[in-house]
Length: 271
Image (cartoon, rainbow, N blue to C red; front, side, top):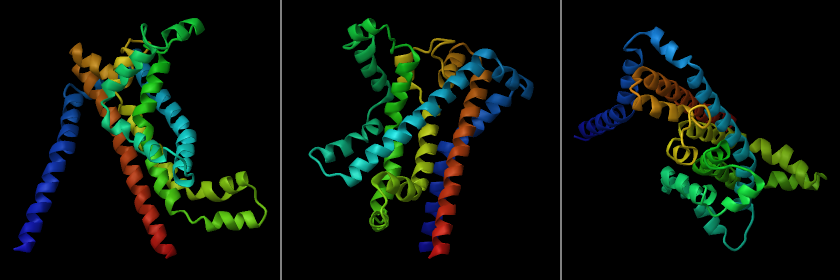
């Protein structure tokens, strides 16, 4: 009886995952290649499509670089420092998981829009945030904030500080200890954090649509191009671009899973 229950449970789980993940991917493949491979390449090679992918890539790389620095600092402070409001700060890190990206974009408009709170200052500086790249970068930074921190915090918590103390007794200063002892120990956290942050940045839509406006040639990313292509009934272009983004995200996730298994094997070998 127990074996039958386990088989049924496994079957339900597999069917659930196939329905939610595999079925949409298969639909994208059929939608993209339904009218031939040539039309797919023709759609993806258009200047506006290529430009939207380059803009998406640029935003993703910049966001990863910023989170690499500040995400590390935030993780370090949360784990190693004790101060009033620490628990609140730790809880605020998860806010992007709970807040809709559309709401994020609207909040940024309230701050940086034409009638926003900071509009007079921005006008005086002749600096544009809303419906421009800075606003899109801010929106993507917000929605990707937790990934780097949540990967680094457990690593820092489990890190044996005796190694740092040993380095200190040998005469190393704080900066040398961080670069030569602590930082190498965080490499897996960095790899996972970078992968998840980049994948999330590539797929962001709601926040950058609101704050960026999806202006073709100026603020249109790959996801916004897909939205426009569907609206203009350019289905092959929309399906093809969506398939490219899905494939990149799939490779990133599979790469992360491979690295996790490699790390586990290395740990078992050392043990």
